[in-house]
Each structure stands twice: as structure tokens, then as C-alpha cells.
Image (cartoon, rainbow, N blue to C red; front, side, top):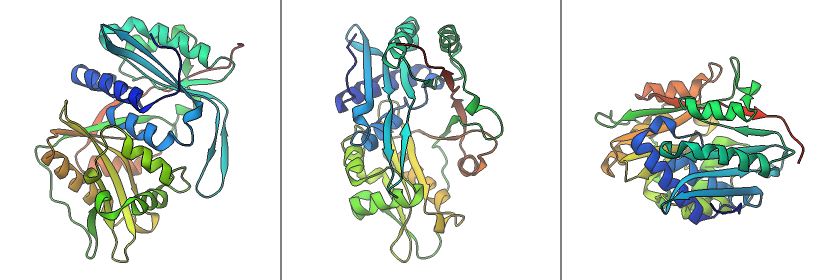
Length: 317
């Protein structure tokens, strides 16, 4: 067991290895923010601005990491439009190998100590009955923010790559890769799609350093006027022959033109050529957020798993 420390690129590679091993045996138990692609994306884009507020702990058995916890502690978020937001609570991303499920109690205890005095949230898989029972035993309950028509929770969607329709772009639009378009265009495409965003050029440098990033699998759609109208990154897990889209976004001026659908289909064909046999993508799952889910279902994705957001009120240190 390793003490709490900031999260390094080497740590993320170890976390990704555990994600690969869990994916191989129980893919529905891969927690939100704990997949191969999510780990790389979240570390890469956030390490420059938020990394000082991160703490992690690794648990090993026989030389392998069998569990990890990544606590995001209070910090100030600065967006590209100049606005700021103070995050006052703590949030945990974590993963425990199902063959070492009993370690979860140590993960929970570590989180409770690390984030003592703070409101604490966590996103276990809804399919992990053992984990849900253990979190409940430690005082965690369903987060009210996850309930109702506009509840905030995430589902992971999956499809195979056996039969992928050809992509069709509107006239004058074309596919580019980040390798071709360059860093400035790649960053601007994300900022336009996700405004107001915390993404920066330094964050993109972190993304490119993250294990699994490939510039040829970072896709952009260029409009006739040169604007990068949509973009996505695919994270290829060669061990499990899977790829994950994260993130996926379209410039608001170019939505409802079929760009997202075409980009996903084009990406799936690239992923298949790179050796993937299935692909995943996450989206908000509540009924009040139908747009992304409708897009993904329209190109053949179906729900694989969902998270079960939990919360615990502050306790004294």
C-alpha cells in the first residue's frame, strides 16, 4: 500500500492497467471515471490546473495494483471565459479488482480520512452490489442530485464494430486529425464545443502525454470556412481490442447537420482498422438529457453500465 501522493503520469498508467484487467473479466464493473480512456483524458486535461488538489493511493498484491483511489479535493476552477467556480467538496474516482473486493473497505477508510470535514461523493457501478453495500455500511447514500428527470448520472454505452455504416458529411466538410490540424486547432475545437471550458493549451499537452493518446485517432471535422466544427478523441486499449470516445463535441453553430454521427462512424472505422472489435462512449443517462444518448443510440450503441452516485455529509476531522 502506497501513501497518499499527487497523481503522476506513471500512476495513471498503473490505474489503466487495472482498468484493462477489470474490463477483461467484468466490464460492467468498471467505475465511472475509471476506464482506460477516462483516466487518460481526466489526468491529461486537468493535471496542469487541478493537479495540486489531487491525492491518490494504490493497493498492491503480488506486484500488481489491485485497487486505487483518486480523491479530488477542494480547488478553484478557472474557465476560458474568465469565470471561476470554487469546488468545496471532495469526489472520488476508484477501482477495485473483483478478485480483491475486500480491499474496498480500505479504500473507503482512506477516502474518509483524506476528505474528512468535507462533503464526499463517489460514483460506483450500479452493477456492483457488493460495493454498494459496503459504501452504505460506511454511511454513503444516494445523491439527491442524481434523482428525477434531470438527475445527474452517467451511463456507459457499447457496440461492436462488425458492421459500421460509411460516414456521410455535408458538402464542403472534411475529416482531419489532430496530427494534421495541429494543437491550436485541436484546443479551439474543444473550447468551441464545450464553452465555457477549463481546457487550455497546457491541458492539451497533458492529454498528448497521457498513455494511449494517438494524434491519428484524434478526429476533427473541418467546415468549409476552416472552422473545426466537431472533434473527438479515441482511446485505444490494444489488450482488450476496445476503443473509447472521450470527449465528443460539436460547435453550437454546426449542430443538427449530421456531423456528430459522421464523426462517430468515421472514428469507428478508424478504430476497427487499428485493431478494435468494440467501442464505448459515455453520456448523461437521465431522461432529461436525451440528445447525446439519441446520437449514440442512432449509430448502434446500447447501454452497458451506469453509475450510482453516492454522497456522505461532512464529518469532523
